[in-house]
Image (tube, rainbow, N blue to C red; front, side):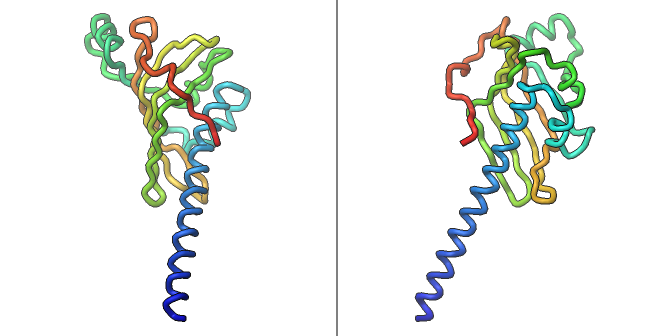
Length: 171
């Protein structure tokens, strides 16, 4: 009887832990979806701001590949572009959409990273693309983005190699 109770306890703990991980993964996926829809809808800086830990998170990009070569030819001392999420949001053009591909989520306790390939389009035309990384922490049962870093490749200089792959969808 004690052996059955022991195995039942282990099974219950495993199922409970699995359910907690699935819930946490879903919350992280919801952050991605809220980020995506905030850009598309572009109607609430408050909704967008709520995704971030505070106003001064790292928000930086580097050029890569052929875009980097062209940038360095024009600006030899260029290293990276840095701003903040409020300026990013304020400067979005009408009909902007960011799409996410090959999303990978990694969690360790109350820390998480999300990495993915992305395209940023205006009027359904890709402007730039690359790889993006987010760091997040869990605060009061809510995931908050603490940094956003990405590579940037200009679509007019170099075509996106993954834009025909399946995009991220919340499911």
